[in-house]
Length: 334
Ligand code: PBG
Ligand code: ZN
Image 1 (cartoon, rainbow, N blue to C red):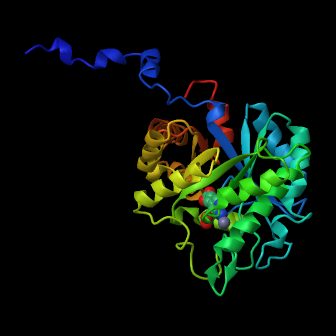
Image 2: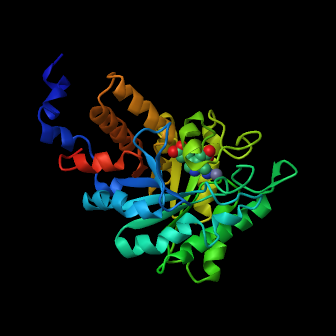
Image 3: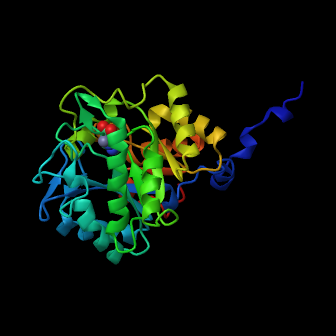
C-alpha cells in the first residue's frame, strides 16, 4: 500500500494552484447581468421594502444610478417596467404604449451607453389588471391570444431604441412564446439583430415574493401554477428547455438559482453549446441580505461561494441584484 499516490492536497496549496483547479468557474463582468426597475413616474425613486438596497426609479434617476456601475465594467442589464400611475387592463395595453417606461427609456439608454447590452423582460403581469403573465379569458390563460400579444410587445421593445434592444426576454412561460416572438421580429426584418433569451425553466417558486412587490405584479386571483414549472419536476424543466431551443431561442435560463443547480447541470450537459443564464431571484437576494445583516454569514464570502457554485453547475451568466457590489470586487479574481 503506497501513500504517495493518495495525496491530493499537493494540487492546491496556493492561490494560483487553486484557481487552476477551478476551470471555468471564474467570475468576470461577462458573467453578470444586472436587473433594474424603471417606474412610470419620472422623478420618483423608492426603495423596495422587501429588497433592502434595491430601488425602483423613474427615468430621471436612471443615469445617476447606472453611471458608476457602467464605470466599474457593467456589460449587460435586464429592464423591468413598473407602473404605478398608468392604468392596467386585461390586455396589458401599457406594456407597449408610448407611455411605457421601458419604451421611453430605451433610446436614452442606447444613447448614454452604446456598448451596454440591453435585455428587456417581456411579460404581461406588470401591466395586466389580473396580474397574470398571459391573457385571461373566463378565469383561464388563453395561450394563443397570450403569445400573439407577447410577440407584439417584444417587437415594440426591439423597435423602441433607435437601433433596437439587443435582447428580448420573455418571462411569461406561455407555450410557443419563442416562435411568436421570432415571427414578429421577422416581420420587421429584425431576426438577426435581436436575441431571444427565454426564461425557459422557470419554476413556480415562493422566492419571487419580493419581486412581485417591486414590479407590482402579484396575481389577483389563483397563482401561476398552470404555467410555471412544479418545483419537484426536472422532467418538465428539461422538456421546456428542449422545446425553446428547438424554437431557436438564443439563450436559455433556469430560475430561481441556488435551489435548481441540478437542473442547470442537466441542461448544460444536454446543450453545451447554448449560453445558460441563472436568475438569482429577489427572494435569494433578500435571504442572503438578511443572513449578512444578522451577522450569520459574511456577504462577500457567501455571495462568492454561491456564484462559484452557479458557474460550477454550468451557468454562463448570472442575473443578480448584487451586480454592482460584485463588479467592485472584481479587481481581485473571484
Ligand atoms: C414575472 C417575473 C417574475 C420574475 C421575473 N419576471 C415573477 C413571477 O413570475 O412571479 C422574478 C424575478 C425575481 O424574483 O427576482 N414574469
Ligand atoms: Zn409575468
